[in-house]
Each structure stands twice: as C-alpha cells, then as structure tokens.
Length: 178
Image 1 (spheres, rainbow, N blue to C red):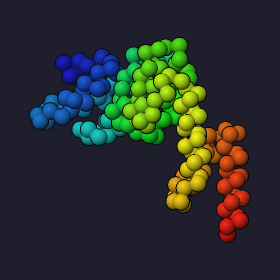
Image 2: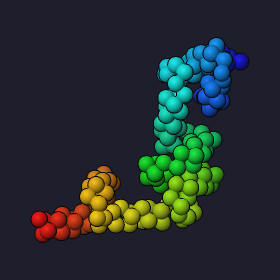
Image 3: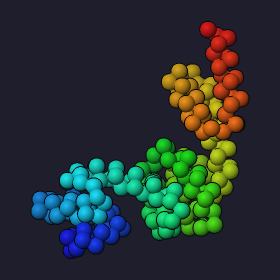
C-alpha cells in the first residue's frame, strides 16, 4: 500500500505517510520515506521533522495559490491551528481577504487567527489587519531595543503608508535622546 501511494504521487497521502514514518519497523520507515520522496520530489530519508517542516511550507504555499482547492487550503489552515506560529498571521490575513467568498476557508483562517492570537474578530479581515498594525506600531514604544528593531523592520516590510508616520516619529524621538 505504501509503495502504491508513492507510485500514485497523490499529495493528500503525505499527512498519512508521515504517521507511518513513525512505525518502529525499519523496512516500513524506508518504504514510507521512498513513497514520500516519489510524491514530493524531496528526499529527507526517515527524518520526520524535516518532512513535517517541508509539509508546513508546502501547505502554506498552497494557501496563497489561487488554483488550490478549498480542501487543500483547509488542510493547511488546520495545520496552522496546530502550530500556533505567529509568523503566519499576515498570511492568514491574506487568506481572509482573498477567500472571503469561500466561507469554509475564511472560517478556518479566522479560527487559526483566534488560536494563534487569542483575539477574535471573526472573518473581518480589516479588523484583524487594524489590530495587527496597532500592535506593531505599539512595538516601537517598547523598552526592549530588540523588540523595537524587529518591529521597525517588520513595519518597513509591510510597505504600507500607515507605517511611515510612526517610523519617522520613532526616528526623531531616538535622535533627540542621543
């Protein structure tokens, strides 16, 4: 069965093959790693963590793919709910904006945001975006220099005019205190 899944190159079987990769039998592990390599074109041998990392990145890329099915996007969003990784917050905002006409996708994106942040703005992408930007701007006022620097970099990456005023103000305040 494992070899057949690899030969079929059915990407939805990756999640299940990762579970089988944990089997104590070395032959099953090897066959599973081979099947995963056939499906993905990647060869991480029996390194479960490497497969999980690859799968996470793969699914995230599918979230932003207009051609990806709602089913694939929901699978990716469920993974994000498990990881609770705040690095994906802005990706989730994009999903909410792009997929608002697909209620099941938008609801899963909102649920992932709730689990990651502890906040709840439902499927309102603008409310989430406003909350996030206010938090970043507040980060510029932190007493911790590292937090201020990371926040300034993140605001700059947004390339949004709303970030210009707070960044200039912080630069002026910093120059006055030096």
